[in-house]
Image (cartoon, rainbow, N blue to C red):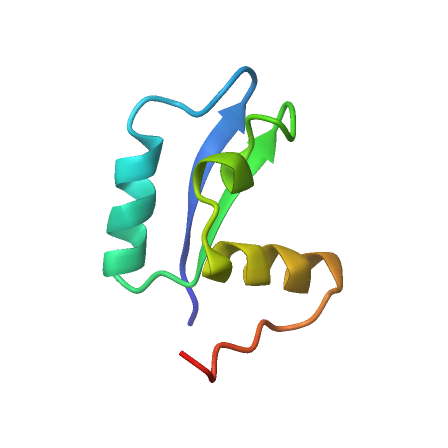
Length: 71
């Protein structure tokens, strides 16, 4: 089973503690980090501009599984 964490709806920026929650989710080995966006400018890719996150977003948009075999 794969587990993810939902950061909630971002109307005008990330909720308080979002970065810490994302780091903890990664440390715990959760598979994904999700949010409902009010605006792309303040979205998770703006705050968490990591390669893994970008790969997951690209895979989601292309409806395929991300490949992290090079990790």
